Amino acid sequence: MTDEREVLIVYIGETDIQEWTQGIGKTVLMPELLVGCEELLYNDLEELTCARVETIIRGKPKAFDFSVRKTHIQDTLDKILEWALYEEKYELCERVKILNEYLEDKNNRF
Image 1 (cartoon, helix red, strand yellow):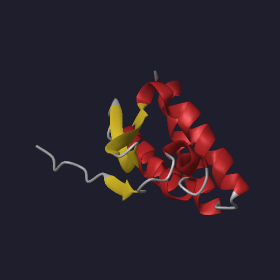
Image 2: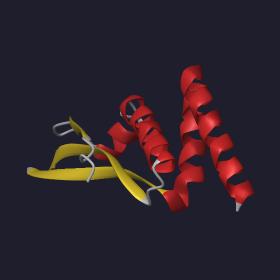
Image 3: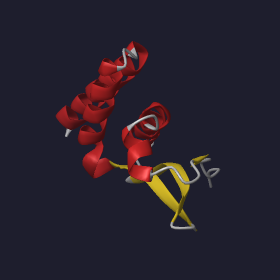
């Protein structure tokens, strides 16, 4: 049995969740999603929850989970790469490149 992975929890108060995830929240979520992609691929998992964003909507607490799925991994990596290039986070670009090569190699073996 393996230890359960700790999920990043971010509390944003009454900030609009969509506005946060499309804006400043990307600097928090994208690197965390990349770590999730690495863990998912290298451990051959189907799905992995990477982060939870907690907020208040109309006075009630809500939580939104952000996960990576094997079936959508390429789309997720493409979005991370696009963001990383725009933000000039080249070390993240390199990690995405390594994962893309890993996927290509894995697909060529089967």
